[in-house]
Length: 187
Image (cartoon, rainbow, N blue to C red; front, top):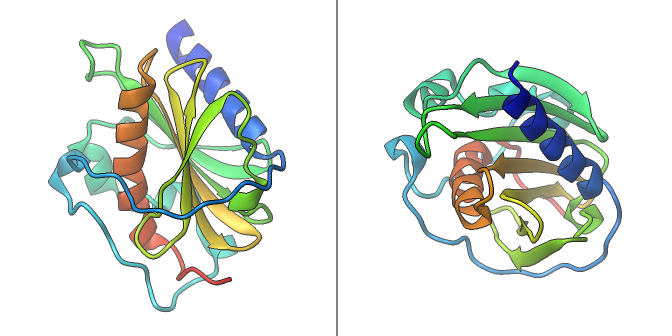
C-alpha cells in the first residue's frame, strides 16, 4: 500500500470513528440526482424480505460487476470504529488521483447516532431507507448513512482527494447501488 492510500484509509477511518458518536439531529428529504457509476439505475428499491443486516458481509454490498465497471480494486474487509467494513480503491479517476470507497455496517448504531461534527448535514433518503449526507468541511470526505432500523445503519464513505462535492456525488451514487442489497427499512 502506498503512502497516499494509507493516508486516505486513515482519513476514512477517522471519519467512521466520528460517525460512531451520538448526535440526535435527524431530517427527511429526497436523494440528490446524478449520474450513476457504471451506468446502473439511478435509484433502487429495497428487498421486501431477506437476510438480517447482521448476516450480510459488507464486501458483498457492491457486486464484482459494479466494482469492475467502476475500476475499483480488490475489496478489503476491515473492522474499525464499531463497523464491519469493506474498502475499495479507484486509482484511475481524477487524473490518476482516484478515490476510495468504504461501506460499513453498523449493527448497533442508527442514523441518529451519526456524529455530525465538522460536517454539513443534509437529509438524503436512499430508496425507501431514511438517510443523511455528511459532507466534511475539512476534506474531500463524504458519508451517506442509510438507516435500516432505529438502531442499525450502513455507511457509504468516499474520499475524493480535496473535493467534498465530488466525494458526495460518488457516495450518493454508490449508496444507491448498495441500498437494494439491504433488508427493508423498519422503525
